[in-house]
Image (cartoon, rainbow, N blue to C red; front, side):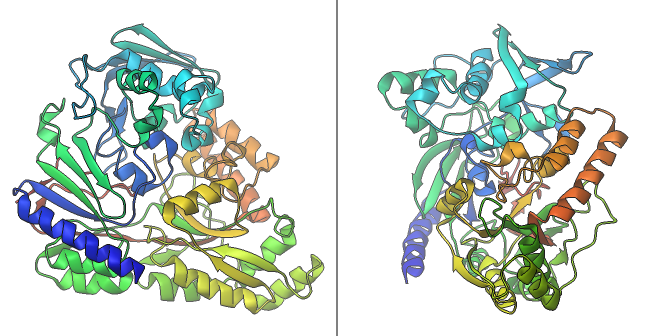
Amino acid sequence: MKRSKQWLIAAGLMASAVASQAAGTLIYCSESSPGGFDPAQYLSGADFDASAETVFNRLVEFERGGTKVIPALAESWTISPDGKVYTFKLRKGVKFHSTDYFKPTRDFNADDVVFTFTRMLDKNHPFRKAYPTEFPYFTDMGLDGNIAKVEKLDPQTVRFTLKNVDAAFIQNLAMSFASVQSAEYADKLLKAGKASEINQKPIGTGPFVFRRYQKDAQIRFSGNKQYWKPADVKLDNLVFAITTDASVRAQKLKKGECHVTVYPRPADVPSLKADPNVTVLSKPGFNLGYLAYNVDKPTLKKLEVRQALDMAVNKDAILKAVYQDAGQKADNALPPTQWSYNKSIKSTAYNPAKAKELLAKAGYPNGFEMTLWAMPVQRPYNPNARLMAEMMQADFAKVGVKAKIVSYEWGEYMKRAMKGEHDAILIGWTGDNGDPDNWMNNLYGCDSVKGSNYSKWCYKPFDDLVQKAKVTTNVAERSKLYSKSQEVLKGQVPITPIAHSTVNQPVRKNVEGFKVSPFGLHSFYGVSVK
């Protein structure tokens, strides 16, 4: 009832919005409310779509729909012979957004880059002390320990000095968390005692200007008429219509109440494909849906217990019921399309009898109780986490393990998961930069135990391989190291890989220029509505 009421309110708001807007308005049916609008604080695509992909730019960015890194706020860059010093020449004439809550007095310059990264680097930074927060992606990547300093050489030149070579450093700077903030705006907030508003009222240089946000209803943006790349701004208005129910999103798209939607249920895809006004763009998913075991919990700390749970999961049944025809069984801890993927690793066979034996060996002949967390939203790597959790609950019951399904609102789910409150958790990942480090270090490395390593697993033999690969520039050598690390991970079972899903992206046929991101993001610059 609560969801229905919220949807009716949102539908009324959106109907009003559609009636009052010109043809240059695009309505995007998004899946959840963002946690906030400061990209550096978050890990979720829903948060990045509402901030990094709209309001902000980065020094370098990925080309729309691809993995190639191209210049953005930095026009060019050079790398020192030892691979540790990166010097960026900044673009001139870039304007920060002018809104009812901030009027910039200068253009983008080196001060903004220095503020953006120093705030993440320095826990004693005045702004960070005024608004205490963590930057999980930055620390998950190990950048907090590897960036020695960020310096302004002149108003249009910035230099990053690293302690160690980072083979993926440029790709990392193209990711959402590296979005550049306004130092002038931050200074104004700091002086006014309102530092937290950086996460509620964003100011960037991006293609869309933030206007207002109604939680669980809508986010409104306007096209940035002063954008440094004017050809990319083809919309007057962009509206995120927050619609948590996938079937409701599909119906709204068919009715023309939104132009683009996200993560349709597999069961809805055939009817969407049959609609003459809808196009369903499909792409193999650069993703992984998996079950992570929190090894900080006494029971799950035991390898035999994790092995038992791993072989108790009937992946084939889950694949058929949850993913239907839109996924493939996952054998490994990263997708097959990622270079360095170890093809020799195979999925653990379903074997409840053997699972019972292992539990008895671990000291649990009668099983045990645990929590099993299920996401409240559809994600590109998991179209129905609740159904998956229910199937796993039944699988675990067959070997004597009683799993209690737990869920929270998406933002709360992520916050609590990073704190490690769960026993086992359904989660997943869509690659962010095309580099193996984005999987092996971000999801399973020691640097990430307080962030996106939901297993809280820090295993030195694995981590040593991953860290060595990170500072190795030879691709063939890196690939060997990552391949070996995958074997180590498979043997220690911090996760049970479930599936890689096909990404189906439904759009109205009057939408032009929309491209499916390999990283699961949704960008509307360069997009128009006929």
